[in-house]
Structure formats: structure tokens, C-alpha cells
Image (tube, rainbow, N blue to C red):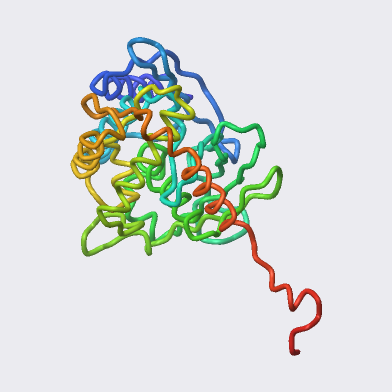
Length: 307
């Protein structure tokens, strides 16, 4: 990596991190999927309790006026997620707790000849068990969709990629396995409203968002986090549910008022009353997991179908 480019990129990232309340602890050289050089940044909270990894192309530069402010906003949100007991964990609308990991940023162009950008990663079922159920995914962004994205780099794409994976799970199109090949996650303009100029994954009503937040607090705080609070006003969740951070926070306040969670600012933890609903959340998990499994027509398998 050229010294001047490296110095400039590091300085800009360090500035954005400082504005977001993060400290740049290290920078190392890496390589992307095709062996091209990258810059790997390790960022931490002032307490040093949690670490955030950021990987950018070597030739990335903040050459558009919106790039640096959006990087700063991304890091500010990540700083709040780092205060979660399991920052890599999320839930789906159907009630599956999942953990994202091993994403190989930045995007690379497809090697199959298709006009797409690809990023590989993994999603694990995160219910506290030791089953190793997971899905290896290949999120594919069309060239048309890529025109919407400020830059095909981690800070500008991670949120919509994670939400596209969650949406694909909701549709029953990703299966959790103990091993297996990569499964496709098509990220197309169907997830973006050009009229509204924003991403739209799932339209939800107030009751669905309430159920979602209770599921999130139950799993991510109560089960996986030993009762440590989780961030409620997450813009990543707001995008996934087609709502606002303010709406999510208000919903959490409503649940806190009836005794199902405690709220401290934008962070929530479950009450014993919520944790007593364990059978309900386990049943929802099993149903959601079953929905992701391929279904076969038993009559065709046994040769009874008309041909």
C-alpha cells in the first residue's frame, strides 16, 4: 500500500472514528477475495471492551462529499452496537436469533461472468446451543442496484446486505445446515424505492414491531447476554422493519410501562415476566427454523402423482 495513500486513508478513518466515539487501535494490510490489497482497521470503544473490524479497498478514497459523513454515521451506529453483549447478533421478524460473521469485504465482481458484485459471509443460528447450524451466503448485488450505493464498501453496504439476508430467511429461502455450499442472497432493486429514495424490506405494523422488540430483548439480552441491555433504537432494525428509530424507542417505552422490559435511555433488558415466556419464544424459533427447510411433495416422491 502506497505510504501517502495509506496515511491519508488512515487519517480520514481515524477522524471519522473519533467523531463516532471510537479509537483506532491498529491498521494492517490485507487482501480481498481476488487477492487485491486492502486496509484492515481495528476500532474499539474507549473502554476497550469490544472491537470493530473494518476493511476497505486499498484504493478507496472519500472522493464524494457524502462519503465521509456516511462513514461517520456508520461508525457512530456501530459504536452503539458494540455496547450490546453480542454486537454481531440480530433477530429475524419470525423470531430467529442469528449471528453474522466472516464477511469478506469489500465486494468483488462475480467470477461466473454475471454482471454482479458479490460478498461472502456466514449467518449462524444463535440460540445458545452447540448445534453449529448456519448458512454460508453469497450476497449478489446487481450492477443496477450498485448505482444506488455511494460506494461498494463495507460501511455503505453492510446494513442493507444484513437486512437482505434477514429478508431472505423470512421468505424461507435460506436453510440452516451443519455444512453445505454457499446459498445465494439476491440483492436487487426490489429492496429499494426510487420514489422514496430509501430501502424497503418489510412493511410492519405496530403489533409486529412490538413482537420483534420483545423477541430481540428476550434473545439478545436475556438468553445470549446474561441480562445485559441491548440497543433498541438501531437504524439497521428500523430499515429492516420499514420504520424509524424513534418509533422503535417509543414501542420499547410502551413495553417497559407494562413490565416486560426495563429501559435505560436507548437500551433495554428483559424483566422476569418476559423471561417466563421462554416456551413461547422457543416454539417460535422452531417454527421459523422449520419454515426454512425445503418441503417435498411426498406423493411425488412415492410415485403416486399423475404424470
